[in-house]
Length: 83
Image 1 (cartoon, rainbow, N blue to C red):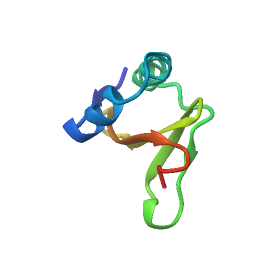
Image 2: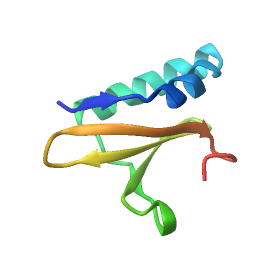
Image 3: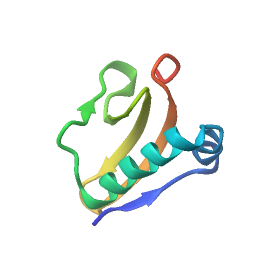
């Protein structure tokens, strides 16, 4: 089980989503907490070291610390705006 850290700016982005999208994002965050990373993709370029989880039209960008089982959410945004 991983510990999820949601910084205040990311939480504010999450609050702006409509109810249906917010539920989907929360379910994906729960998947992260359980360690389900199967379809997640590593990012390239300046975002190297971060991963992307798809949640409908939204993307959850996060950092995964292998040694201490910690995931820090970096951004939650529409796929047009996230990168």
